[in-house]
Length: 141
Image 1 (spheres, one colour):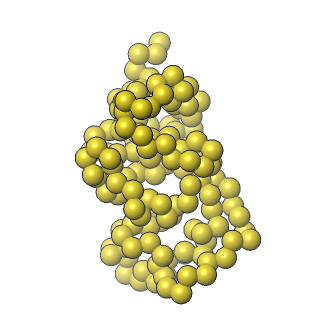
Image 2: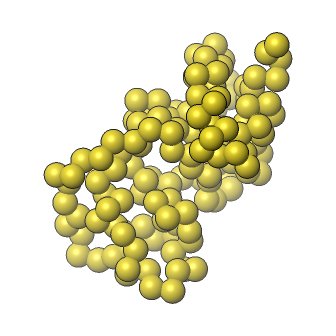
Image 3: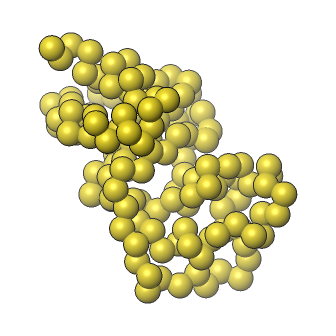
């Protein structure tokens, strides 16, 4: 997943924007070149710098060339309003409705990233792990 996708994603349930991105693993692709004639590429939100574009004093100085070279392999997208979390697995954000999500697979994912999540996002890790919707680890011993 590219950072710039966060500029257009909102929570499918309550339309919260921007969502919180927690990057756990990413890969750099130095061969990628930024070829767009304008900067910034994103219109509302820069997930690479975690800021709203309009709040930046010099939006044309944002590091779009740098951002363009990264691919997020593993991570979590979190909605601070409703508490829903969505996994990013093998570069694919899985933002499905609750009823179409695979509980067993997503709980295994959550277990596998729990320590990393506590390291990279200590402010929201427990919210996701213990209270996250639709699934969380609160029933685990």
